[in-house]
Length: 221
Image (cartoon, rainbow, N blue to C red; front, side, top):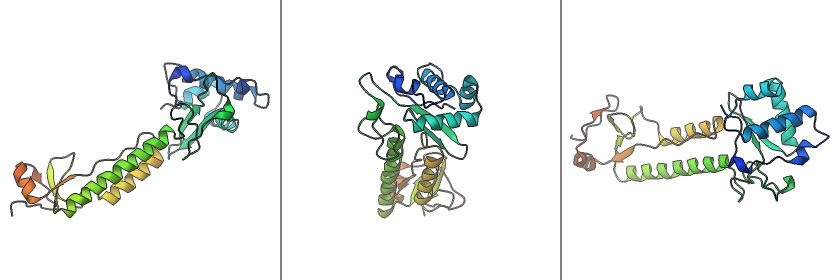
């Protein structure tokens, strides 16, 4: 599981002020150097591998990352039930200094390189998924209001009624997405709601799907 998030590897530059900061311990400066080196490498190390490379325990590496975050050198997040850790070295160009870091307007993490307008990748992804969910729920409700009562799931082979208890309701699916965004905010995504069809539309399609035994849809009745 990667712990380093970077944009273009060529844009990850060492901040001399961090490496020469006498208020940081030698081990903290070593951790910063290793994190930068890993960010420019072709491989991605796990948290355990980085800790072993620096010669510290997982907890000690977490403490070092927090010290570097306090110094403004990296962004460090630990999230989810499995405490997935993400370390993001700030992206400095040759003409930039640490004091000019652009912060994400939503979460406050570094957005200097990927999105200078002030929104990080994680918050952009979250906003996109929630917007996609909102649009899909609006589409589903419009189809239902138009008299479409038969559901064709994107996966599976059975035909359902719109209110079949075996299908997740829009509200339940939205709650699932919000929970996933809390646990794994980088990869969580909206699962599209079923397409709803009227009796006439279903007959015109000539759907040969098997019918759900729970809700018992009967478009030919």
